Length: 258
Image 1 (cartoon, rainbow, N blue to C red):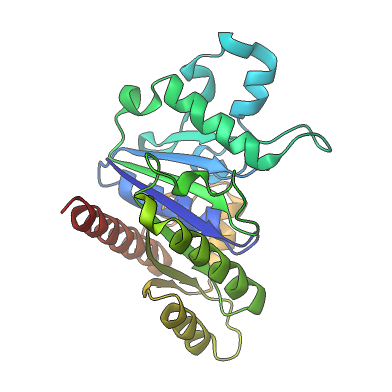
Image 2 (cartoon, one colour; image 1 turned 180 degrees about the vertical axis):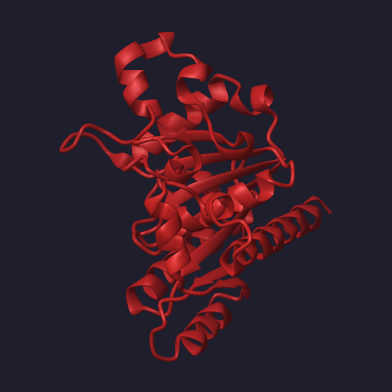
């Protein structure tokens, strides 16, 4: 089992990217679990096509210790196992603490042992990398961290902060930096800016996604590009990205275990 955390600034297209990678791997027969670590609880929306699904923290508030693993899980496209951590009641509590509680509950209920995923994606908001939002980086959770960014200044700033957090934990056996995913916004000197970021944080660009109206069209159908437009060039970009991310994460795992 390979566990991969995908971080990025809010609005950068992170959840769309993760969901399409999940779908791309699932269509190959790979067992995928996607865990949304965002209080909005909308990471897996395009995998299951529903308006929303129950979030772990909401179920915990309603059922307490009577909550079961089946309560927390929704099966989506290609058999993907979809989980949303959720967040606190608005105006009360800490979203970061909520992520910790949700991931601990999944462990406690034996999620990984029951569903036996080959790949786990943690989809994590990266605007603020506080204790809770850094939880997926920690030992026992993700093996590798990838950051989605564009050439926009705020996205690059968030990516640099995420890389600093990974570097801070590197001597503790936590997740390693896997690379950058460039999700184009067609801003001036975008490639140069992102390559400079990669050099600054000692990593590389593992894959690039072009800006495409196909993505918007798929989301209007409440589907991933992989499901809605499987023969499109954009679907192939997501497939290539999924393969590159998985291969990089596997390489890091082998290197770490050696």
